[in-house]
Image (cartoon, rainbow, N blue to C red):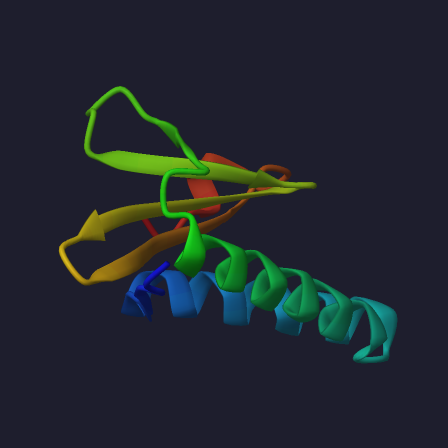
Length: 98
């Protein structure tokens, strides 16, 4: 099976960074943030091998994978998979960078 390259959009990178920095500051440690990062890396490795593991969203183009308190939105584009958003379900939509 051919592995597809995973590309992170600027938006998704920023959302992940904000999440990791929040937990670093709140916990006074990087332990929890590193755990989240490890889970994200494991999930993206699996995604690169099986791009259809996420369910289709209403627009029929974007897919979503739940990961505990987070949603990872992505699209499949020929030879790559683009991560569009790393959404924390606990955040207020008013505080979103969307």
